[in-house]
Length: 284
Length: 79
Image (cartoon, rainbow over all chains, first blue to last red; front, top):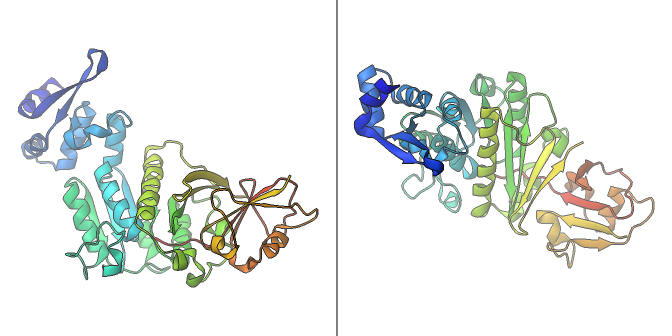
């Protein structure tokens, strides 16, 4: 530890805490110097510092809610985000900022003008570009220690098994129930927990679906309702709602990755930004 | 005690005078099912996917009790 601290000395800042306590934070330049010295990557350098209780500056404000071991655990975690539009665009940015080390971002679509009201990655510059590719660039750009891969593909029963395999959590940011049912099936088969989020108008729903436990069929029936029956067709997807739902999804994903208690199987979080209200409903 | 009915998203516009702030107080009808209540409201039961009675999911056939809080939701799948 003293050796690491000596090596990093020019890049360390002591951050005071109440009661005379303090901790150390290291700048990106320090992490890059450590990575160069040791021949490992940036993530390895972050993990080594966290192991000694030294916080990378970029994660320093996570400290408190997260411990250094939690932050290291997130860096060693892998997640997939299915859909990179209203929900997924923000979810992948939040996961990258949170420090999840390995992200797979999947979407077959490209950005169009009507996405600009709510999709964080849709800008005049990204119109026409594949959402998954833009998402991967944005995540890696935000956090160079994050390994982000974009998969430009429409999901279905054929490609889903390979996409969810080995992930520790999958975040459902799709925009239709038929695809969401396929995703749930693939996650169950692979034994991967799924965080479901959906919205219409000012309302949203979030559910954690463990490999065994209640899921979308307990919510919407044995077959997915036709797309034009979805409330979003009439109510739209206005600006604030996807951001709120995506944030709730990432918060549940984070707790799953850290082994912390969160929404329980069969609990449905119902958000109404209009009221506003947040309630937990129970399935079964 | 009346039934307290809360409607979600598209269902709100289908019941004249519905106030999302307060929900809807409806007279309790002994023996009425969730489906009976939905029909009484003039709603299409095939378009309602989630029925919550006192915060817990219920079927169309569930008989309602005096004072029940009923939440009705259409399918929600947007992202």
